[in-house]
Amino acid sequence: MEYILFALFLGTCFGAGATGGLFPPGAWYVSLNKPSWTPPNWVFPVMWTTIYVLISFAAARVAVMEGSHFAMAFWAAQIAFNTLWTPMFFGLRRLKGALVVMAFLWLSVLGCFITHWQIDFWAGMAMVPYLAWVSVAAMLNYSVANLNPDVEALDLSKL
Amino acid sequence: MEYILFALFLGTCFGAGATGGLFPPGAWYVSLNKPSWTPPNWVFPVMWTTIYVLISFAAARVAVMEGSHFAMAFWAAQIAFNTLWTPMFFGLRRLKGALVVMAFLWLSVLGCFITHWQIDFWAGMAMVPYLAWVSVAAMLNYSVANLNPDVEALDLSKL
Image (tube, rainbow over all chains, first blue to last red; front, side, top):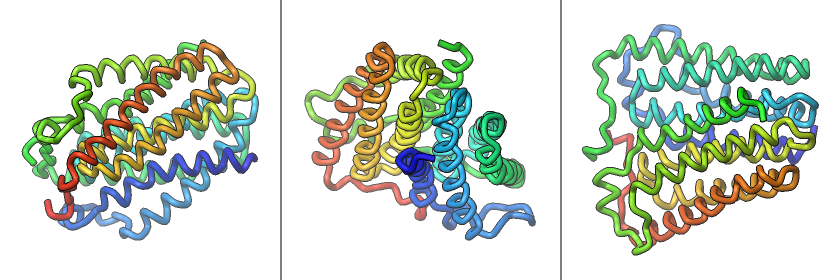
């Protein structure tokens, strides 16, 4: 693994992860109806930090291997949809719109898992917690959207 | 060039580009003081669409070439910071915060240009309009931040 590559991928994850601090849950999120199995707030940053380190490790291993083009394409896709989800959910408060982004994110992560695993066992394994966590996040987004049908999206044009 | 790869990279750009529709300029942007050389609104979607097609073409060419790991790492970086910039500027209305994101975006695009150009002439050329455009966008962001020192950031916790 090249450490400069690892640092570059981790820096990219930092861009995506910054959305968590910029668009924090806050009182609005507390006020939403949530399913009983909703993880406590502290779990989210812990999971994301772990995942960002793991997928940067995976990308840095795979990037220098032959035939990694689809792995790299899916990696770029997941980080874009990952960065988009938080402003959509916590910024615009568009619960169903966020679910659409989540569908693209989930597919990108599935693509990452398959393509990384095909060329490197450990890179594939490093994608497993991410795939598990976006599955939980997708179910949570779906439940919250269903349990809060009347939540109003933020209309920036009125502010 | 592999067409499936091209479609994957273009789909990823679509995720980043969606922020333009989700966080549109609107009355708030109109009300800002802007430098005399500010491009008219219609130029932005035209430029971005062109750039997204060009950089997807560049990535699809370079991804299958040997030694493209840094090119792929910078490509992933630029798409993450690209996705982050619009919610920062038009969503949170944090003009200086957006300038920080823009600095990371500009460096990622410079990294893309150099690393793509080193392994493929046409991929490098396809990055030139992007580098030119983020340079203009960075100057515009800087000017707008300077010309509007009193603009209030959106405080989501109060909404």
